[in-house]
Image (cartoon, rainbow, N blue to C red; front, top):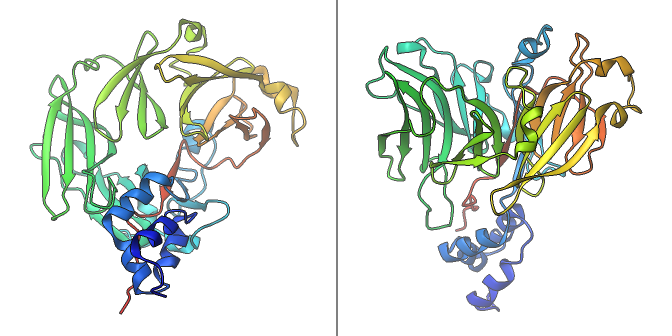
Length: 383
């Protein structure tokens, strides 16, 4: 097989269409494996190809009873839905390797091939147990308790953040990740960051984030899009947490959305479009509006649809369903799932690209979490 020099071979392999095909190519012979294992080649390949999505996790009916006022089904843990067509057997993404089984854990965030999981704990101040895991390799790391966590502290949220870029061009993995906590310490709003280093070292750092909002300002968690988390404060202000850097910034919604926002009815959220860009959407009366963010940072109205018209042809439709504003059940990449704001659960999905409606599952919880294949790929052993 050694008929092509390494430079020419790498140029050919750069054009391999998928992560899985690259692993198969590495199994052909020693020369191909050496070429694929080269750090410079892996960086180049990573820059040319979008990360392969293995599928999506969701927490089942974890929040259904709270949102709809109906009885939730028993949980067996988070559910994995493979991408289409599936690139890896879905059985490889079982979470049965987690402590005490998957049923006691819920997905709280995802980034690349990692999941941030949490469960209710009895620690100081009710601090939850947290772990970071990689389903495909069946590895997990418990996140140690925050230093100096006492009765004056309250943990609000936690998010996965990239670590340092490695030689293969990857920014996050089981030996290279950060977890950012948003918390109150006394009267101050702070961020505490746990970092896992490649050598197995761990560290904590803290910084004040009072400039984002005081303790007394309400912040509404909107969702994840384009690798960043979005929060709504007041006066059309969005707070953005960059998942690559762990830094916060602000954005302003257009004044035209003011009448559509109802913080107490939770009628607006953010999700990711199929172009990987954020979409802000509102449900107001019988309509849904979708706003996209321009490169300038401004938000503009992209699409609008009347829900009573879009769902008219679906099985079980009744015009009375839209006498009350709909409820947001789930937000995922390129779609949202809604149900009429009544006691009857009638879930339907809206495609944010076509604005077409279709029947949907009603027990996917509030968010769907993307899971990619690990990088760099685990190459087959060659003798």
